[in-house]
Length: 438
Ligand SMILES: *Cc1c(COP(=O)(O)O)cnc(C)c1O
Image 1 (tube, rainbow, N blue to C red):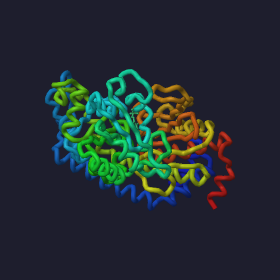
Image 2: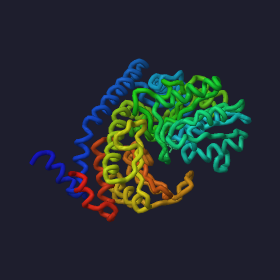
Image 3: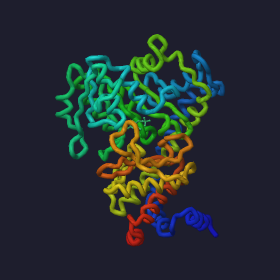
């Protein structure tokens, strides 16, 4: 038997029927050229990361950690210089004390805004968990409680910027503009770095001294450029997404203008202490190694997203982005239009996991979200969404948001497993798989 036959046999043993396997295989073959382009970007970004590590002379001593106050933590300070070089910013704060992406964003906002300032989003409603940070949904400790007001301008129907509305919204109080790169839990298009650049240029023409912050979650290493290359003053993300490469067990980063990053450091630790304290404990080796692997891990996740888009699009489901458009983050939305579809999809992803594959996910009331959410995650790092994972709020339009996969091979298996789960639940007809192959 050939290796392909052996593989197909193992797929079968792991619950993937021949129809589902063959259907996926036709799509994977069609995507070869697209995958080559993804690999080309990964090669560029691999060199970018390596170049920054060599330039900053990452040494064996950097991989060790400090304890207590963490004064003179060579590894921590060097890693921050490496991040600043990769993102082409003046400075960076990269810490295990930043507990997640929401925390990193909240930190960047709360440290750079003062009472009386206004925060402005020119790209519509921000990510769900930020609603409580800002105070869109009243919450203890929100920016609103500290006298920071908020304003937003939605994207136009076709996904373009409402330049007219933006011009009207920027006023003398506007201090910080938050631009979310990824669509998050929405079905709007994700912004390319180029479009982010256009938006920043427009806003700076109206008000040059405004701070432009980009929520870069899920966008790192998807393109050659990052928001810092197109004028962002702050670039913020989570280490249990792309830049942690699946190895970082916690953490967030804030890269940007020196003054803005220092503001964040004084808020994270204490006024007067700033970046000087913050022991790295034993975590730095995983931060470095994860960052080193991140371009290739991100490419694997991206291939999975493109594969899923094509697979479900051809079955007639609405997918964002669609099967052929260019990618600016690793999230794939598939709209099922009914809760059963979301649940079956997530159960398939869960069943494909290396950890906890035997458990069955259920929708539940998660803190920070305004509807029940079902989450599939069988990850080495709890909640890590650079690992194969899916989540869907149980509310119309009943879309599932799928992301990650530390390897393309695993992402492929997971997506086939999700399709198998829909077939087994009677939501996708076996016939549909045959007809589409012709
Ligand atoms: C994931 C995410 C966040 C929040 O990150 P957490 O680590 O889940 O707190 C914020 N914004 C966007 C666009 C995200 O994708």
